[in-house]
Every structure is written in structure tokens, then in C-alpha cells.
Image (cartoon, rainbow, N blue to C red; front, side, top):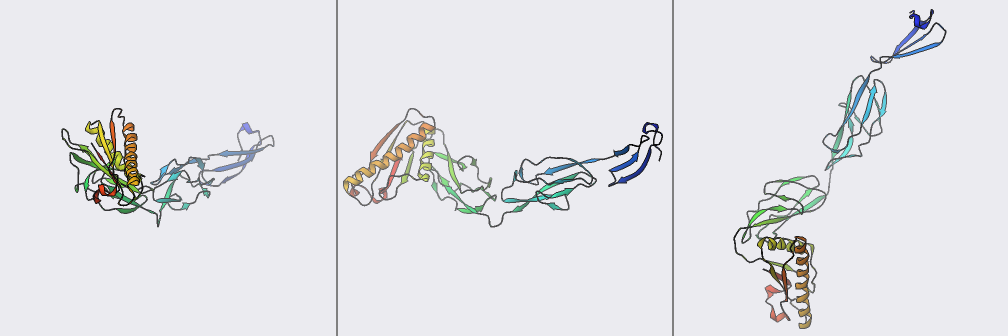
Length: 306
């Protein structure tokens, strides 16, 4: 095939090789006896990665010509609760990260695949009264990523308040809402809204181990809800009364009951300050100097009233 005058009087095309329908190489010589290689008609197709139900940032990949190869990207930037990453699928074949992919003659989408986690850990879901009375819904165990329907609070009550949902420490969920379990235990505490113009005394209690004046994490949560109720009530003073154990000397129980009251008062003071209250009064009382000054129902606890 004689080439045009631009290649010299003796230029010619000697061979053409097509490696695909879109890519051809032409080889020849020009009129000055110089080798001539011409690359023509090389098409490129898009390469796209998709989340496939996961979250995170998908990899990016430049367009590739038909027949070209590239290394399949890692899925380390992606995640999905309750699942593990299982590779990328182009619609027919699954490729693991680091595999070699050969482009065809059209665009390709590599979609993340996910495998459910089997035998995943389960976490306790517990409901707490939050200052109310009644029977809380029974505890349950759920796996990471599982969902359940938040229970009703219809069995609970609190004088001067209406039930306002369940709080997990950050968010309040109404009865019937869908809750998705994370990777830790869940405590859902009843929330209460004061009834306007309703006169009632605020009362709460915490119980101690024998000989101890140490508050537990659940005690601190109970007192935090009491502090919130106290703030909404508009009151400015409260009383904390500590009580003794069933055994021990008069002197020991005098000290123990006072330390229990002081422990509760300190926790309330911190919480009320955190809630922005500046003017409030806490009266601390040791409720008993000996075991004989307490009825059995008063043993090993501290009562808060306002």
C-alpha cells in the first residue's frame, strides 16, 4: 500500500495487527528508509468501584484501553456493620484486592461484596426505670448490627411526670422505634417530662454494698436523672440522708451513714453544676448512729428528697 507524498516517494504500509476490535498497530517504512510505526484507534473505557451496601470512600481508577491490565484496589477503606469485605465483583467474577484485571471492550463496575459475620458477639440490651416505678421490659441479647423494636413504657409511671421515651446516653428513642445495636452493651433509661403546675416531692434512692460508701456507675446515672428532674422542678434545695448497715459499731455506722450521704451529695453537686445551676443548696444528714436507729428498709442506702 503506497503512502502519501508526505512519507517520501517510496513510503509503504507493510502490516497491520489488531489486538482487539478497538486497538490496531500499523507498521511500515517511509521514503527515506526510516522505520515507521503508527498507533491508531486505541479506545479507553471507564473503571468504577461501588460500595455495594458498605460505607467509606471507594477507590478511583483511570480509564483503561481494551486488553490493558490493572491491579484491583484494596477494600480496606470500606466497612459494613455485621459484615466483612469479600472482594470486588464485575457482574460475573469476584476479584480479590491485588488481583490482576484485564479490560474488555466496554466500561466496568467493580462492586464490593460483603459476607455476614457468623457467630458474632452478642451484647446485652437493658432497660432502666430512670426514677420511675413499675416493671421494665426484660433484658435481651442482640448481635452487632442487629435491629430491634424499642419497647413500650406503658408499664411505668412517675408521679408528676409523663413518660418521654428511652435514652441510650446520647439519643432518645420513642416506643416502637427501630434501634441498631453497635459493638457494646446498651442501656436504655426511661425519660420523664414534668407535668406543668404539678406539685410533688422529688425522691430518689441509691443502695450501697455492706460497709461501702462507693457509688456504682448505675448509681451515678440514677442521680444524673434526679438532677435533671430537680432542675426542671424549679426547686433550689434538697436533702441527702445516709443510712447504716445492719451490723457494726455505733461509731462506725455514724461515720458510714454520713459518708454515704456525702458521696451522693458530691455526685449531685457535680451534675447540677454541669447542668448550669449556680444557686442550689444541699443538706447532708447522717441518718443513723447505730443499727437500732434504722428499720430494715432503711439499711445500706441514701435517700434524696426535695
